[in-house]
Length: 230
Image 1 (cartoon, helix red, strand yellow):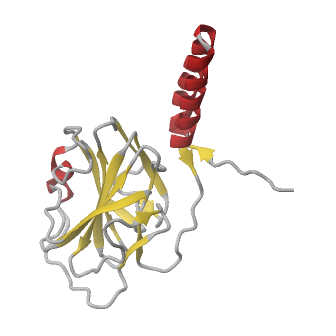
Image 2 (cartoon, helix red, strand yellow):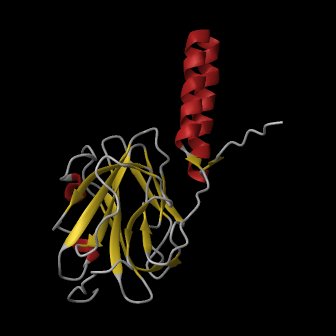
């Protein structure tokens, strides 16, 4: 006998699913057609907040995707968010765009210690626009490994997204692939890699949070960056 296994729902979603369900029941009293629409939307809401388990790579030093979605852009010599205070040098930005049908639970791309966690208020432009990295509301984080290598990553609100949730703080020790937050509804995640590190993904590729490897810290050819985290 086959057993159907439904994914968990993130705790942030229970309130919204409940609201959608109440509205659907009210619509049923008005019209069966409206009721059906309400229940369909309730199902979509539960689907949006799903939180499936993931198989995280065990190789030391690999950097995994922080989000489900599509690699929207890989920008060399990208300007990093000022609030990150990343070391001087060139950085490569990998941007992953999430639509409203993707899993929106975010995962830590690289294990280590969170040495920066800064919320930056901003606009709600379409997250697919390049200027969204600088202008949109975002949560910026920097993680440092035991051997003092650092990467930055951000949660970026989009045109529809109006709420960024981040459950980790400065000083926290995190593991690669660990859940750390959520953005609702539709958004983007950026990862900032030292430019000497060659991304192992391509534009247009679909990613799975916590599973898809986007780069490898242990790869040969890495060059040290100048400066230090402030």
